[in-house]
Amino acid sequence: MATPPVAPPNMEGGPPPVVAQPPGTDMTDICFKDQLWLNSYPLDRNLVFDYFAISPFYDWTCNNEQLRQRSIHPLDRDQLVKMMGTEYWLSEVMEPHLFVFRKQKRDGPEKVTPMLTYYVLDGTIYQAPQLCNVFAARIGRALHYISKAFTTAASKLEKIGYVDSENEAAAFESKVTKETIDFKEVKRVDLILQSLQRKLPPAPPPPPFPEGYVPAPTAEAENGTETQEAGETQNPQIDPIIDQGPAKRMKF
Image (cartoon, rainbow, N blue to C red):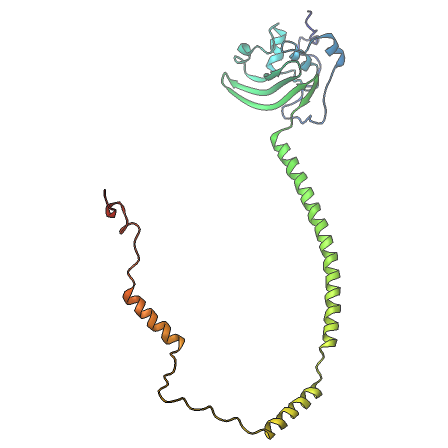
């Protein structure tokens, strides 16, 4: 099968006149799909980079483009590890549905710095959002719903509190009206009780105790005697380590 055509260079021998996307450009709000290319070529690990190269996500200054100009496969890892600069690395493949490209900066054979991630899902190319943006969006959404819930709860509580305050005020007023004290009636009752007390004879004294009667001891005296007897007869508390340790146990 014929290899898909590569974009031709300009007259000066440089890359095609396409504006390269600088590292860190946020293009998560767009996607790319070329149905004509998909109808002409199969989407596999050998041709997926050529498909990715015609998308607006492609950086023409990468090391992969230099390999393409030298007629070397742009995803040849043996060649990419020898170069320095920006490159696209095919990190995950699930043919023909999913291909994941990692844009990274290579400073040595084993030293790379990840920059961005792109993925081709069923022929459509997307830029994966950064993790910090995902967290910020999820936290912002959660805070929005929490704030909305508090606002709704506060409005309902204000209505309930307003109704309760009205009910309490009405109940208090009715209770005050019912429990109004008539001081004239209180004075009249006191005068009646005082007059009855003057008319009645004084209360007789209590009868004496019979001979030989011993008054029962009080509760404090009983507690004192019981505590003293318990202190004399009770054994000290057993220590589970000193008194019941392995050395104190019976041996058979």
